[in-house]
Image (cartoon, rainbow, N blue to C red; front, side):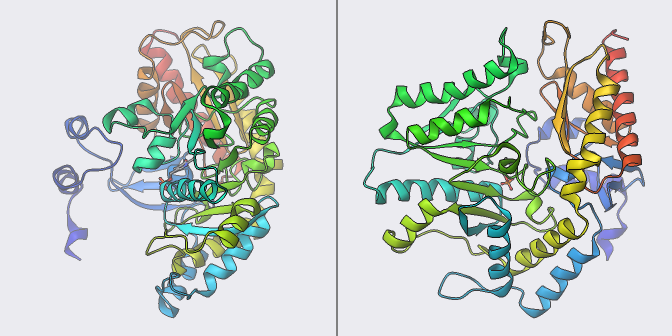
Length: 459
Ligand SMILES: *Cc1c(COP(=O)(O)O)cnc(C)c1O
């Protein structure tokens, strides 16, 4: 294989010449000498083409829940590829892994979600949901119920419709989005939006921002609210306990469907199977991706609640929607093997009762008194460390995001993968991470945050 014999420098050059990686400033990347080339992985560790070994504090992109190098998943894919590599599920055909996975997902997800619709990414699943929701309200004769409300810093994907669901200004700006009919309100992000309110009081205020918007627009025009149980890519925003009960009350009162985007929270990330279990959410629709296969192959699913499913089935006729790879048998086989691992190794329980509390405790005790750290928050195996100019007043650094980027570079230089969202350092490691590996991750994070503090003259 000649392509395996190139040097790292050649790969880097070719990568910059011919590859446009996503969410990348290509010009500045080229200036910085290009991308790091990841060549293999095992457990919670990554290796690059220079032989450097890195600790993956992000589980890839919030997805490699069972860790790297799991032979069970490789074997499930291999066996399925030989047995039946592909067949579609469009025209009165289906495949065994897809049936088995559907039953399994229905049993795992909260009560009332009894049907699965498949796609290949979180973005496609959310596009699917928007189509379903519109179709649903049309069937109900409520033709004006079209608007979907999301939150600022919400992340729901990168297709035109899923970006419209997102509350990310920079993404909107480049493509003249959001489309009409997509609104965004304040997130339950006490650290930036809480002002002088106490946390629980602020949770109610943030939920009522949705109520206010519904009233402003008229409930007869609002189709649904979409929300991640914990906002992930927007900075790991943990809602106050008061938020979700109030938001559910509001959706019920105004007859607005509730969509729980569980793409990050799902499959054990919080120490519960789903973020909905953690917060007692009873969604009408649920988005699943990422951890569904631990990222080994692409797959997503929309879990459809009885109210929507029954209307679609009883009154909807043919639903003119689907993807060639909706219900890909190889992806479904990998998802089944992934669920086997999560269950057999009791990873969700372990994160809830043992390693999750250990990680959270360790992060808090390491950074509570750190001069650069305003808050450590998180649950299970997801969390964030807020870097701030003034701990007491929650005052931000003048160029919001620059300190986070600096710290991220220090992490990278220390062979720790953590991500910066504005000035929050976020972590979301594989659920298999052990206590000694947690110690190592926290220690590397401390090295990076100390170095950042020194750069700023704060240590
Ligand atoms: C990653 C993500 C998506 C989009 O998934 P893709 O597979 O990247 O399209 C949607 N929602 C949430 C909450 C996500 O974190």
